[in-house]
Image (cartoon, rainbow, N blue to C red; front, side):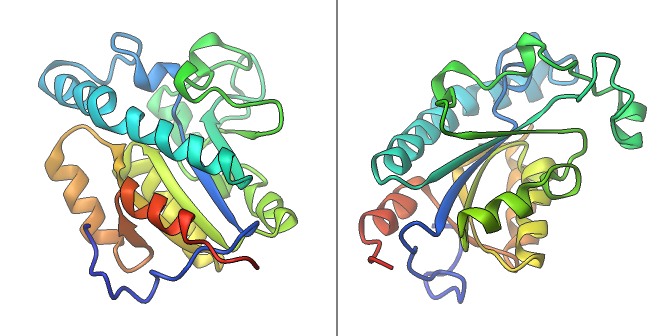
Length: 214
């Protein structure tokens, strides 16, 4: 466990009010050679962590949430247009553009959404800034949000902070997230510990199994 067991945010999950959010688990960020920004030593660390730890843990989380009938959401970076004119200024300046329907924008096969799971394309780092996720979560009756994905200190970080600011009780799954080196990952966890409960995959699965009826 990364955060103290007595974290004030470590409260029981609520049935049909607890959702799992995967952040940017899509082909371009998960498959070596597709993202030109992830190369060399940083790329070696990142892809090794993804394939050896993060994706297997995410599959465990996904299977457990599906088995319990709880909501699963996926957010991906994907423009609403082919030319990307709808992107945020930051994404334009950073050269981040995945045209609508691009195969590299889709969620990786290991986590492929079912027809009844929600996929939210975004054009900024923060899913709460460029999608209707807040509206969707409130319609679903979600109060507890479990967050994992890539990269820890960018889009995952923003999802956690923005969800906390909007009144969701957030859990970050340490071993189901990755960024480009361990120092960055740990620094981010230290920085956002005041916005969420931080635990590991086993911790989430234990709480899910003990989830009381609402």
